[in-house]
Amino acid sequence: MGDYLKISVKKISQNVILMGITVSLLVGFNFVFAESETQTLPTDKGTLNVRLSHDEIVPGQLTTLKTEFINPQTQKIQEHIDWRFSVSKDGETIWGPTQLSHTSKGSLDNLKYEFQEDGMYNFEFEVEGILFQPIPLEKVTFDVIVGDKVPQTLVSIDAHTSKNFYDYGESVGVNGKIKNYDKTVHSNLVLAYLVLDPSGELITLGQTDPSSFGSFSFSFVARGNQFESSGDYSIQLVFGPAKGEIPMYLSGGETEIRPDTKPPKILQPKNIEVYTETNDGIVMIDFDVLVTDDTDEMILPLCKPSSGYLFGIGDTIVKCTARDSAGNFAIPVYFTVTVNPPETSIPSWVKNVAEFWCEDKIDDSSFVEGIQYLIDNGIIIIPLTSQSGSDSQEVPQWVKNNACWWSAGSITDKDFASGIEYLVSQGIIRV
Image 1: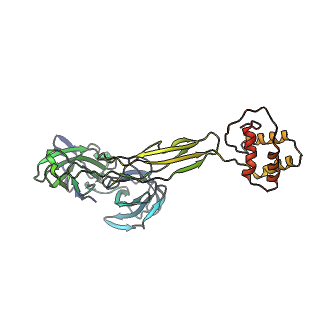
Image 2: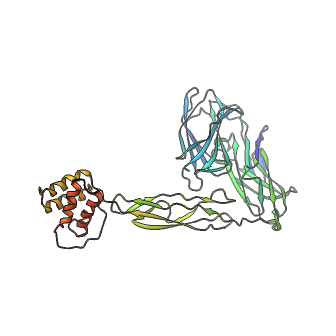
Image 3: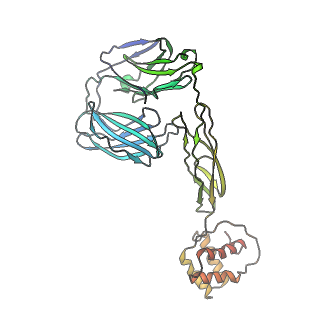
């Protein structure tokens, strides 16, 4: 886990000019009573985004907290999350942490908490697993303010790098949050960052806009002449008068490059086999394919056809490839999606029709008309088959024998179905 930075602002100046960026900060604002609210923040290593929603908070009553874990690559809810939850106030834990739990659908709809009094509450979620695979602990903390006023709240910065040590040429990621950020007060401010080499010389700089809830992230690549020296680099952050520093160790220099040469690995999926419910033979099939890598935390595979594709009857080979951030390609994997036509489905009460025919209470033509009616109205499902187009409408005796034996329970549904399928193939019954 990267280094953490918490800097509190104790003296506020109204205007600060840094490298041509003019910023201003107002402190001492009031908060309204906590009404319906939604916040979305990244975990401290950026693997997931977490969305927290709640209705109006009334102290002394239970408040429902809806939480969704979101894949930042797809912007969809990430299924199968192992999570833990705790609540703190004034720096002390007042509830939890809970035991490690699992949500298969990737969201928590019935998490409830009772706020006893006004003040600033910190809700912390910890994630330790995704899709049944353990991951290093990641955290995200939400500030929830209860009450009509919180006096003189000071602004601070909480930030960290994605890891402690970097090699020359790697992308350095920084994630964080402006604590006590208020969009109505601070929306005109930007977060500026400076990167200093081990001798204290400025080598790169930039700026980013915090989100409406104060979260931010940025990255830079440690490549070029400025990053040739190994040692302790410094990332300095400025938001108005709030300042801070994150240490970063770099193994620099082209002679010390340890490039990422190991390709990712795609875990072999199982073959998929389904049956269509209708004769149109088209089925939408979703599937998940997992990729592991020694450097990148999450890699999305490229599969053709992709998950959610409309597969037709027959065998379709799916090819999946993957590439890591260093350009290494995984060995492709293949699996088969098999879509089968619907099996012949015959309700048991159709035996009454077969029995009437067997006992000569109806003739061949009436039996064929009855079966045709049941097929046309979806009572009997027959897979599509080629038809000979023969003009003969004669029903073979063995088909009637099958009907007699089936009505008496002497043969299976499948055996009786073979007779009906024969009538279809001969064009006596039309599908």
